Image (cartoon, rainbow, N blue to C red):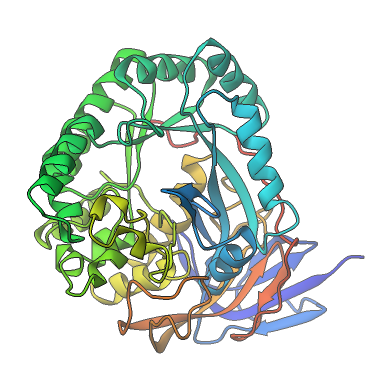
Length: 464
């Protein structure tokens, strides 16, 4: 049965344009845009967006729902996590399927399909974590690219868990150069970090703040440099995840100035939080333990600059929540046992709008780094990430003047604290459409588990 929705009177903001326009949606897709009032479209539903922004739904290209880590699991399921994402104006996530050492990529991917299928409130795709590079794995990478899993994450950190050595990384990069896949890199020198962890604990330095002190910015920069040069040798593009240190940004900028296909992502926690949070007393700092770690405040200016100059292209969340009670507390007396990860999938669009309010970025750049660029980077544009005829009708009506206070009491993520507790922001999601279906209606959840569908992806559309 055909359905038509019209969104009237709003300011439509995409990465390239800001225009007052009415938007016609037919059968889950954008059918047309027109000057306000110029077209008297008949519709089953009319949404009045006067005085509001009409923006593409956010694309969060880095989430970890139900991730096993450190003897526990991320506290958001695909059901709770995608519902919270919708509340925050995000309509597509790309999560990470995990290959376990000794197992195939296919086993890992099938396991994540089973977790997500029928449970998601919004659309989703998968990257593949490659933990065990061998000849069989390399052949499987080709098959996964053909079926729409076109990005592969490797780790220079976490020896004994996800870690790949330089030879394994080079082989995977060479394969991706041939099959069109994109290697995503967690760039930290995990071998050196483990030495520093051992030494800190031997000195009795067990509090959460030492998590940040041992994971040194120079070891992020060194690994970033090494990943860039390995990718250059392989002739492959590279995407560095969760960049937190100014020294790592400098490595990316230098590589891009050389004309290399090297890209960087940062996350809201690195833009708005710092080592001051890790140092909070009474073990409160454990709430802010993630890897790469939070950095001293002076790094923030360089991250914002990187976002303005396009040396950093994407802001994702690395949403990987663990409750303070019973999960983060596993690391009392030993910071190395604190599960690494922060909740944030619901907060990203609002925090980045706050950055617009504060003058760090423009409105169009907000949409670019949160919607369009991640969609292009991971092969989903223009189906996702913009508002244009033919695009999926993933649309957010956003009230730029509404004020809110972020709090665990009011958020919808399945976690017992907020990383931004008490933070006042201007701007709020009002109504959210996913493929034309209203999933948030004037601050009321009307979506359902199972509405979200799996989205196969083409290869990276962002290459120089």
